[in-house]
Length: 210
Image (cartoon, rainbow, N blue to C red; front, side, top):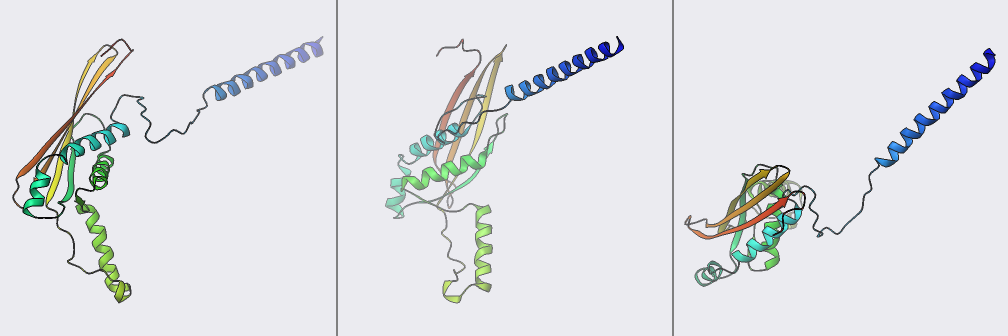
């Protein structure tokens, strides 16, 4: 009788162990992530926060507007040639993290791709380039050394900031982004262009219809 009970107990334990292992395996399978590669230009809004699409869209539209204003023709008349622009500080004054460095890169890309202006390196980038020139002066072949004092000075600097306003009610949220950029004549401190781009996003349960 004792052997029968012991055998039944062993069977029960095995069944429990098998059940626990099955639960663990099933849980692992059900929680596994599926990764799908998508085109980099695809618009995907998961959280509703500022993302790569916003950065690219704002840069393209606001620089497109900048390059259609009279300042660029006025520069050609007074100075001749393409204006030289440097992108300075873009401040994130919003309530969330925004990859400002990526936004600055998008702005520089929009300037360069337009073919209408010349864009020079930022102050942080210039430091690394100057170190390279100094290193060349000591170690590179003489005929390949790049000379000091030949940097292209910028005519204009672009600066700006990104602000947000949030409105919440229950589980719904509206996020308003405002990007303001200013182009300033470096020699005279004259503001020659001010641009603005606004984005409004509704984040909720799908009840809102524009």
